[in-house]
Amino acid sequence: MRESLTSSLRANIGSCAVIGAVVTALAGAFAATAGWLSPGRLTPTKIVDALAPAGGPALGHRRNHAKGICFTGVFESNGRGAAYSRATVFAPGAFAALGRFNLGTADPNAPDATVRVRGLGLQITAADGAVWRSAMIDPPFFPVSTPQAFYDLLLASRSKDPEAMKAFAAAHPEFKTFGAWAASAPWTASYAEERYNGLNAFLFVDASGAERPVRWSFVPQAPVVPISSQDLAKLGPDHLEREIAERVARAPQRWTAQVTLAEPGDATADPSQAWPATRTTVEIGTLVVQAIEAEADGPCREINFDPTVLPDGIRVSDDPFPAARSAAYARSYDLRTAEAKHYPARAASKGE
Image (cartoon, rainbow, N blue to C red; front, top):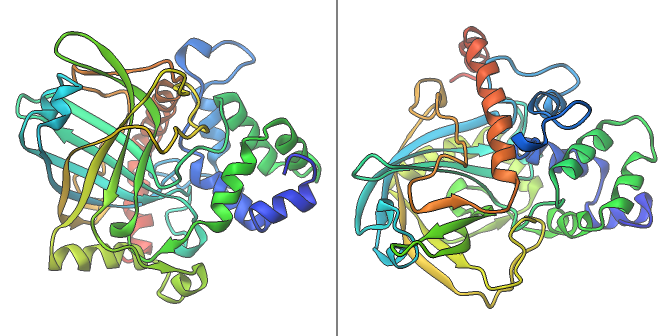
């Protein structure tokens, strides 16, 4: 990918269509951090504007991850997280959870099989009212290492210059790793079979004030059944929403919450770098999804899954991306709420 757009991108991503899907899938992840906002540099507006497809944004919808469905349930904390964080959400007990399964696309009507990345927005509220929000996706790492690189990727993917992606790939060799994942990772036919990863590093703060960098993931307890994108397409354009609603109606679905503890030298400011598989992983509880609701009238509709909304006991690290995402999410939220009158009409067109 670094040397030749024709050979490397074709080998690692498969086709220009896949490249476009990957870029769109991740487009809601980043903007510039507040500290970077200066004339001529990145702003949330620039990033959010870059998300829009050629025909313009879907008014009233999230500017990315626009296709999704709400859920409610509980987070069953087993108490093990309390050894690493004083956040009350890690005390033993069951705490209210709500969230949103989604596809990484700016098009709320996109067929499921055309979108490579899936996401989970999650809010957990502890007994004392403390709130933990997280926005996760299913890739194990991000395609680039900096917000500026991500913005450059957006621009390159939309450029009419046939050399644009070649130049981008040459300047960002980490993109090759992500391309290989996009080309080879198995698809599934259910949101319930996906592992959702928080790619950014955060700091857990324990009762003594000691800090430790962590990343977290929610691992499905449902058996994972691989499927090809071609077979997924045969199930219908909106299969994932229908399937998760039917599955949860039969029985609650569960994910094991895992926290991975960093060791000295692990990259905490670069989500394109996976930590070694040998790192200690602690199971801290279980997310139980108990009910599914259409987004139009569901509890997730007005939630901004801002990853910097954290309880005491969890802090941002030197990773710049949570603040970057927060800025972009805020801009997207302001736009879609101002356009609320457009949302029901678009939802009705999908039969919701």
